[in-house]
Length: 246
Image 1 (tube, rainbow, N blue to C red):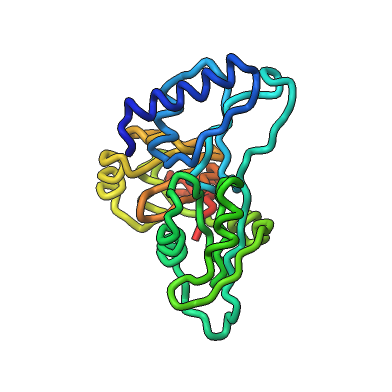
Image 2: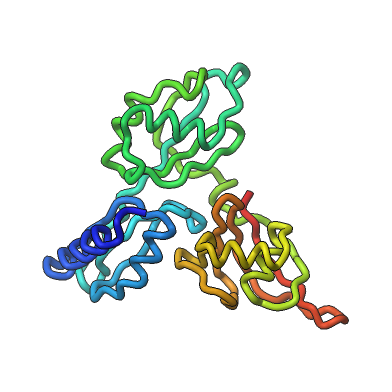
């Protein structure tokens, strides 16, 4: 993570600017760890996080509110569709392929949000300031020629995943992570202890409990939404509902 002191100063300065001038101020995209730091700063200025989708991991901080600023300003995040020109002959494209192509253009990671892939088409969330450059300069990913254009996210991304029910011993975070990703409880706890697990953008603490609506992100594994308890089994265990993002 960027030096914590530098990031703290930068976020505090953005919040101060919004509060003193009474206008919206936006950060660049923040990682989950950086979002956790923002929450811990307890700044006086109100803020919200936005990444394009409710499930987005990388998000910008939007400092301000309608009450503070007297108006509402949409977050400066756009979605670009990165589509092979000839899908029939296209390489199978991964997140790493799309990100590598963008990095090769000299684009900073901080202006790019999540990249989602649907049917070998990439959907990139980015700051609107960098979007024209990407549209004009991104012409290929691996050996595949692509076209780039603004787009709404496809329905597959906008719609939540289907509900899946799992049996767990309790509503503890380690139990849910173990069940979703088919790990042992000790493996799940190791991920939490090594600061690899986040709940709604905040670093998870040991033995954390879950509430309906929590979004759990586990580095290198994925993320899911916890929907709460469906019912209790005859053996006293809990059948809980989750929505797992593939």
